[in-house]
Image 1: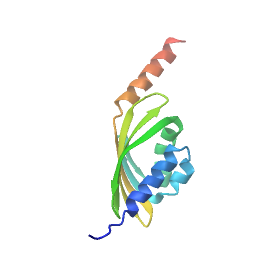
Image 2: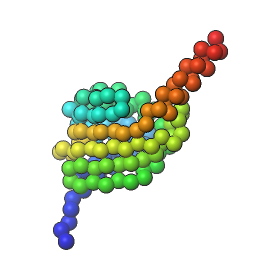
Image 3: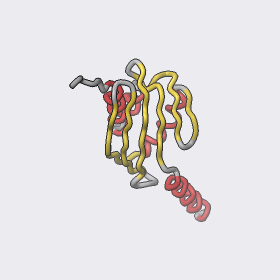
Amino acid sequence: MTEQSAAALETALAYHRAWTNDDFERAMTYIADDIVCDAPSGRFEGAEAFRGFMGPFTQILTRSELLAAFGDDTTAVLMYDTDTVPVNGAPGAEWVRVVDGQIAQMRIIFDRTPFDAARRASASMASGSE
């Protein structure tokens, strides 16, 4: 049996541990300057665009549970469940491609519906209280 490297999985897990443990700056050290991230809300190209997308999410995160993680030397997949200030039980998944120890490509999958509903409810409450 040959030993298989899991460098991408190790990078993906280190990134995940950092952003779910309130250390987003450390998480960004695993992100390539030229990352391309596809998410339900669109495509984000470059580290600063990615920061603008992912940073606000980490600020409302209250809990994360890693459900599964698989990977090899170049790609990894993580599935997790999160709670945030507006939404509890928001599952997500990430596929990443790692180049030279950094995440160069990411595809994030999650259901935006509960977040959209929470925004509408918050807006409705704000407009009803005036």
